Picture 1: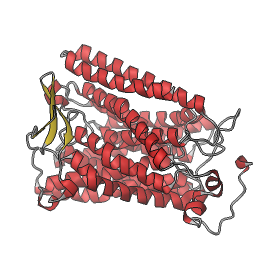
Picture 2 (picture 1 turned 180 degrees about the vertical axis):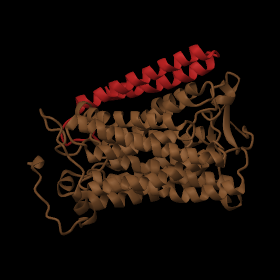
Picture 3 (picture 1 turned 120 degrees about the vertical axis):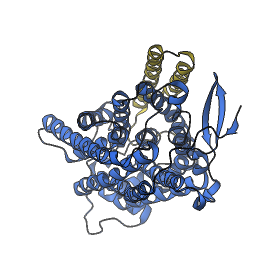
Picture 4 (picture 1 turned 120 degrees about the horizontal axis):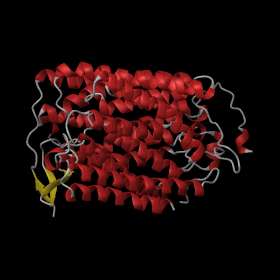
Length: 63
Length: 435
């Protein structure tokens, strides 16, 4: 689940690049980049939830 | 397609007075590293204190060597060559082309030498941030490996993008987004990157033994020396003034006459943050919490790294107050709700403080479109660098295990890794969490 969240986050980055290239006007560009950031935040939340599910006392991730 | 290109015009040349002043300021900047190191040590346990401070020094040394051998080449310098590809008719400068092993640095212009010196100190600061989060369980070789990866591969790429003419710095020229991504003193390049690296490290290394018992609340593991923590904050203030003023002069080409206001803003942001954290913790717990107040102070300083050079004094104070309110609340949320064991509070202090400062700089900077540039920069670091650093740390953990064995954690990192404690006359009490 953590990996799923972390895979989603670069999608947000590429959306922000797409916004720069596709929208010359400031309004739509800003809105699109805010959506890209929202995608990244969703990915981060999923990753954090994944960490909470895997949490065990005294343990790191498996090596 | 990637082609080497000299894509930038030469930056305005610093006057001799500015060069001398910047050099003096950068000589002060290591105090910020020393202050953060003291805070890291104080927030850890007494049985790991010597290992923690030695670790800070080793991490700094490894980062400097890694940056010299590989990183400086990738980071490049302002006005120098870079690797550029073209997309949608715009140049995207994605990698620098600096001096190999810093060969010939002595003959470079003084401004280029100062830029390298600033990056040296910045990479050292970025590298010790995750070390603080791994306190009490991260092995010395692992800390050095993390510093090597950050300084040789990750930091230089971001430093080029933000400072030395990369595509984020050119957002203003290519996409009319303000003056490009503004990060005069390393809020993004140092603190946001360092804070997110700390999160990745905590995810990979796991929590301290006994921190999150099954079916119970998180165990409080307070820092062992409040004097180190608070004195570290005061020492860090001096270094931060050096970073913020030198950064404004070097990367924003701010005139010398504007630097006193930048210094005022730095002080006001820290003051606002400390006052706010003091108030919040007093209301929340009945008494102010010294370690959280220290975290608030540092979060204010981190926020000032982004904003001190571009805002006025009253907004600077408000930014500090916002950082001071957010810090204690987020520390609590991360520990209690997200099961993140971060002894130094680095994720909140450095990542959240930096985000706040960068957004505030975007809103308050006079250039139109600056907010957009800041959002793109934040989206880049959060969306690209956090997953990248996590992946690198996962691979690194297979090669050099991050975490000490359970017995080492029980007896303390000092005895386990160094063979002697920081306080040999202290009596070590039994820790009930290990039963």
